Image (tube, rainbow, N blue to C red; front, top):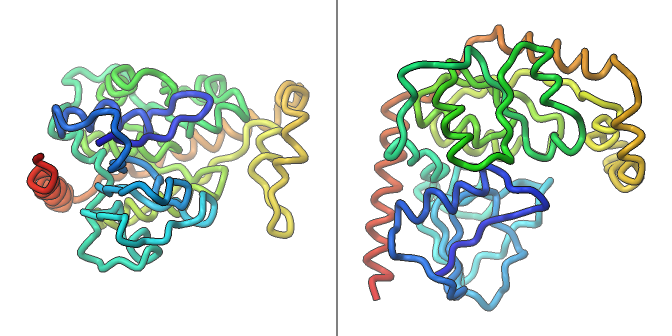
Length: 295
């Protein structure tokens, strides 16, 4: 059985968690045989997977209409659990299939650093880094910058060493929450990511209070704006270099001010009993997986 993970032009912490966490949860379980295909962490429940392959679902999520179209569930799909109630509803599954994002199981392997090095850290969505210089924006706001494209171990260490995490990257918040590091949700500049945030949060009874961000460049405005229901991206993308480099201070200043305002809000944590229940449910699913695929 081979586990699937999304990989774009650059590595991304949320997706790379598959290679960090799944072998620890299921040692000696995976190989390079693609049938069946194991679907774990990420918004990877879609119609892009080969129809002829068997798919094994362990806590994965559907990304909403801003992502790839949802799959047609048939006999090729074996679903142990999904990320949240919105995924279950979209795929026509019973509520009992809802567990949580498997990244909550990081609590079994890591703990917060006893000595905090960063008063407040900011972790953007990896795609936002192609739009604007968010490292410079974070520095202007007085925040430690966590790059979601860095190796998983480095990102984990920086999350653990933070007193609070401001996260546009959903898995920055998920892992911080699992490690009991308070976090503040930032409303993504690209609204396509909102569905998955609500999906995970509702699975853990979190009342999400996302704080507004602001685009940090004219290019980011174009790449995250829709007009009459249509994305501007195909028209804006060819002008990436000049639009990112235009010496317009308004956008990065506005973005830094939004981060400062967000950092002043009350951070969040899921209820401890709910987190423990989600981890226990996922552990039960692992037992079933091992039993069903023992051969």
